[in-house]
Length: 206
Image (cartoon, helix red, strand yellow):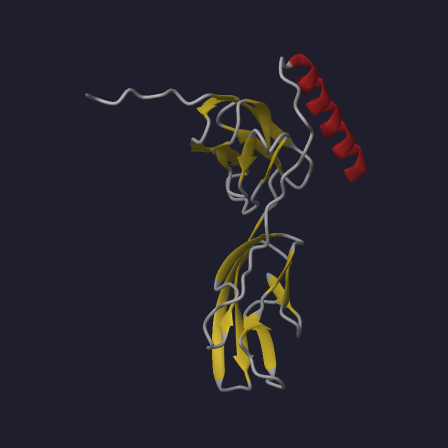
């Protein structure tokens, strides 16, 4: 089913490329990892508060632990967020839970997990956007239902012209046109056509 949705999306982008006066290369830019290792020497969690969609999985990591140090994980409500012995959290139903992480029983950390329903639709607030080379603009999305904690995935059909971050910040890199796509897990998506033009030169005051 996902293969069929991806094929349909590719066909849509190809059709839009044919209608556009500029050839757009179908290259997708993916967001990076959420967690990063701490530079501190003290034990620390990769997150202390995060959101999930039902049936999603996320792993809580503990940095800077010594070899052989025992780590245990416990959920305040296994019906909402279940956690196994390796810190892998599974979202079971909508609600909130606290994951308690214990190191050898004498040091504990707490992490809040918010579980929301999956999104059923996504819409960008802009369908067309013109930017000068070097400028930036963050695209806003409308997710339904508004109680969903799902975060859409952003991609660009040509990152050499327009790059986009995981939060929807668009960076105009060179003149041309490209589509920014915002997609949710069920395959629904919306697009914004971004036109990048040369930056206007400002005259220096004499």
